[in-house]
Length: 276
Ligand SMILES: Nc1ncnc2c1ncn2[C@@H]1O[C@H](COP(=O)(O)OP(=O)(O)O)[C@@H](O)[C@H]1O
Ligand SMILES: [Mg+2]
Figure 1: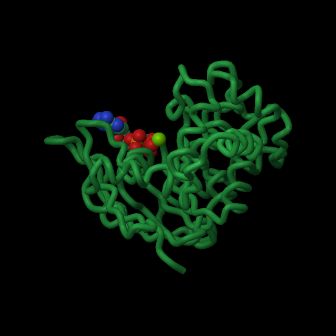
Figure 2: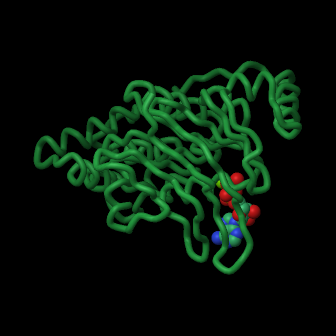
């Protein structure tokens, strides 16, 4: 299988200050779904932001994050802003814990969605209008016309995250980076959004980097797992290996804790019907 993303000792530090992430190295192939698990503050989000070229100053990345693109490899750590703009959206899309992070509160949702469709897929006029409505229908939003005319604050949490997902997928990227995309949602709508995300990835044959502090969610989504702690890469392996025979004591503790918790919970009922 062809390589889509290579991280080589990708780290994050405060300029003239401490190191926050000490260096992650891995290879993600087309179609693979990588889960990143770790407790709060372990460096998961900073790693994702570094790959996306979105670290806020005074943070900066070390090492490299090389994406395969139609125009050749792009190291997002070293790339110019112009090059990054060409890669974000079209090669890699992202959804975050807070859907408002990627949405403009003052622009109608239809206009926001039209932007990547026009820019990366060259759509105009009626074809563009149809594509906007299709993108909203794809993420199972009922009444796409109404949603397209809405502002993001008029929608519920689950609807907002569906719109954020539609926006991330609009330009047809190869890779979706999803950083705790269901953590901020009501429990009743988490399962629906998670199922939708997985279905979209599967149907589009995309690759996924899925970040969560929740091991059962990672176990459901990922076929490979990276474990992070205190800014260090603790363990990396296939989901089976990491979950069945974890090599590191920290991973063993994580797995044991989540089994004990599961034993006290009823099986999850993944509905997705609760909120549209
Ligand atoms: N802008 C920043 N300046 C200084 N430290 C930061 C900044 N952003 C995050 N950190 C620190 O970096 C560490 C990793 O953060 P983060 O990647 O957000 O963790 P996670 O996503 O795993 O919860 C945390 O200890 C956090 O406090
Ligand atoms: Mg985080």
